[in-house]
Length: 99
Image 1 (tube, rainbow, N blue to C red):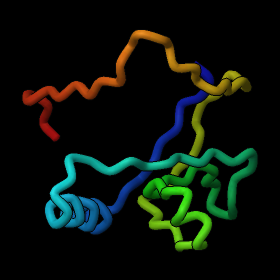
Image 2 (cartoon, rainbow, N blue to C red; image 1 turned 90 degrees about the vertical axis):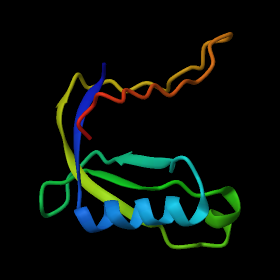
Image 3 (cartoon, rainbow, N blue to C red; image 1 turned 180 degrees about the vertical axis):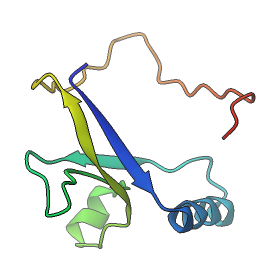
């Protein structure tokens, strides 16, 4: 593990995301998390926004920021994750979770 980060997401943003999912009939939303080397004036160095397609990035479409936060632990090394062959991406849903 290279870092632990926290992200704060406002209730209104969560409602907007849920409404968007319901209107579009999608099962989920992909988000991108950006970790900067230095914090801003509020001590935040982590940003989270809705992922964009290459076409949206090329068209300079504004990002929809979901939340922000900070790194609270790191070993100083963050590596790019390699996809292991033969293992499919999986989403585990636990109905017993309170959220």
